[in-house]
Image 1 (cartoon, rainbow, N blue to C red):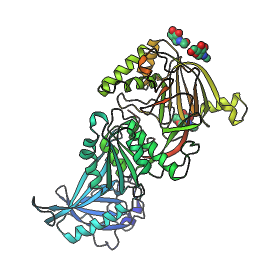
Image 2 (cartoon, rainbow, N blue to C red; image 1 turned 45 degrees about the vertical axis):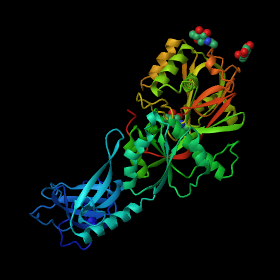
Image 3 (cartoon, helix red, strand yellow; image 1 turned 60 degrees about the horizontal axis):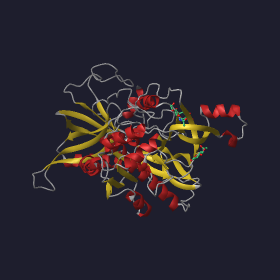
Length: 525
Ligand SMILES: *[C@@H]1O[C@H](CO)[C@@H](O)[C@H](O)[C@H]1NC(C)=O
Ligand SMILES: *[C@@H]1O[C@H](CO)[C@@H](O)[C@H](O)[C@H]1NC(C)=O
Ligand SMILES: *[C@@H]1O[C@H](CO)[C@@H](O)[C@H](O)[C@H]1NC(C)=O
């Protein structure tokens, strides 16, 4: 407790005694006091102290307590009974002078004080913005405080100052623009972040833009849309990084990282990616993570076929998941939710297992790897495992895919960034059993506890359909002349049609995404 002395403002011996801060508060002892003054907060006159990392205040009481003995600060009332409050400056994202102005006035007016804009943690991973007003009519006083507070704000080097914003005009109910201009832009403006907005008009628009546009001036790229758009932007950013590094994008083996972080504002019909990142599908939370510069490196996969690079992506489904998406794409004219249900029912009605061979390399350090090491020679190459058979569905996920419709984690046996993927295989079974498995997918309890379901923790997967009959579903609609003999894959909600085997490899922490650290967040609930 004696360290509290260090917090005493320099040259403030004659002032009121320093306030002991609650011990839970992370103020270093060597905290520098930048400002101390009197403001009115919530109608009460307060003694306010600004240090390097904390702004704290307490109401001024008319009577002075007895001076404490030298070298000791009283722990008991009356000093401590007064309520101190504080905000940590790492939660501050904007500071403005507060003026009283007439409706027509643009400048000048009467200065009322300072407004601070703060990011606050709420329950369930939610972030909210709130304002704190420090009232004081003295211009000199307020100007000097604002100058110091702004200086502190500029020192958070992780926070973006300029962002490229891509809004998917085609996303769920075409709401993305509205969401951006109504809820996101005002906060970015408040934080004085410059933006350059493009509204993308068609699938692939964001990708072609990212391949060419000048990106140097930006600190990050924001995608306003659902999983499909977010995945396209992630792919575009990474592809661009490979091009800039002079890598042949037909054969990407060891990709380089992208310097630009990606932020996802959830505005689609599915927002699994956003949910995985923020632990919640909430627009203000997503926006505040971006403003505060919360970032984390995330794993992403390369997909290639016959030695040729196809794309980057976070997750993939083959079999039921791929066919359902292919069927949904044929019915684009339907409203999204209806389309999904329709496609799911239709695909279930024609449920058919895929005959294929799956080879995978267990992730080092994982349970599967240890088992593989025991049974094979320690030669790394021999640790490829092979499974053959008829499979109804195969899921491969580099990140835990939290479902925003029915909360739950689709792939609990992976993390956002521990360099492994979850491989979840459903072998052939009866339709009722498979339906049971699908229903349980979204719940956390014994998700994979079925005799026909197997899960592995892997680094690489090769999936080879054993017969070129991928489209032979009895569903004539699959037989477009162009997509004949193509197998439908669902990569992050995007339909990718591939004629032959697919090779998926996870690349640890290849892309930075705005968002909190999920280990610190609450469970996905
Ligand atoms: C990654 O984390 C998951 C979940 O905790 C674990 O099952 C898996 O083995 C980890 N992977 C590696 C390579 O450690
Ligand atoms: C898949 O399982 C169903 C139900 O058990 C069975 O009728 C069908 O013949 C199986 N298909 C294959 C290819 O094994
Ligand atoms: C591949 O399909 C053909 C007919 O399309 C069939 O005769 C053959 O047995 C199949 N091969 C395998 C390995 O399933």
